[in-house]
Image 1 (cartoon, protein in one colour):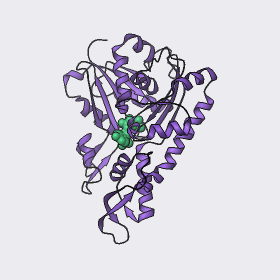
Image 2 (image 1 turned 90 degrees about the vertical axis):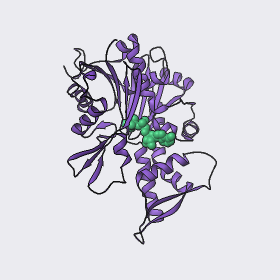
Image 3 (image 1 turned 180 degrees about the horizontal axis):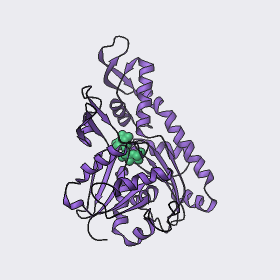
Image 4 (image 1 turned 120 degrees about the vertical axis):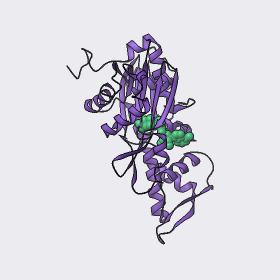
Length: 341
Ligand SMILES: Nc1ncnc2c1ncn2[C@@H]1O[C@H](COP(=O)(O)OP(=O)(O)OP(=O)(O)O)[C@@H](O)[C@H]1O
């Protein structure tokens, strides 16, 4: 494929874009800061910077929710400003968009329409199932391998995919991601310590402590509001409290992985038992997660550098490889696309 081609991974937490012409990947937080509910104050990383810090007239909104587009117009604005739709260079470009599989056709079509009807006047939009792009980015032989299990732990979702010989065998999108872990931590701190912390502080605690290692007695001092006195202050949060808060969402993910492996057809399952589980998504950076999953599920867990970039790295390979492109991408306008006929 020559010319202007972009690969888009529109995540709940972060948007990742691959620009073929410049052979470059860039990433921006999926956020918009609004002033007085009307004016755009900041977008992307700049908007996320003011989240939970801004004065009351500035509100940060997140256009994606649990892996799907929740606010279409906001998302279109955000994407437009990140791609720079004012620039001539993006007009008439081709787009390949990674989309979760376990969503409704209306939700899937929203991704398609978002790009097709954007100001960028896309020449064409092709879809690739996110699980497939993830496996390609992970470095798996997606077309030849008989069984691949991908667990993508993202910011708003955990997507589980079973793949075989270039196709999707099973897929499940859990509405559990980094933000659920952070809310769970903030809730437990509030109940246990009568102390209010923001989700950014909870995220910091989660990143610092991880989910599984031998340390049991460390603590981190955080800022927040004492709910008894109502005064902003600081308190020490022990690792045990953070781990306790993460237990429930983690166990739900493990239960879903186990049940998916149980339902996998025997031949595919045997192949997966040999290769193991490919752990991707930003949450895969969480210290101890791969060990926790390996011990809970009893299968090898494979990891990769920069797991949050697996999908967009997969898009890069798919866009650059004609065979992958033809085999793994489709247009919702294709004659044989089964839903829109
Ligand atoms: N080093 C790290 N340690 C712990 N967590 C991390 C680290 N880096 C990123 N994360 C977490 O990864 C999550 C974002 O992952 P990712 O970029 O894969 O999500 P996304 O693709 O935007 O979301 P989704 O796939 O759910 O739509 C955030 O919750 C973030 O806190």
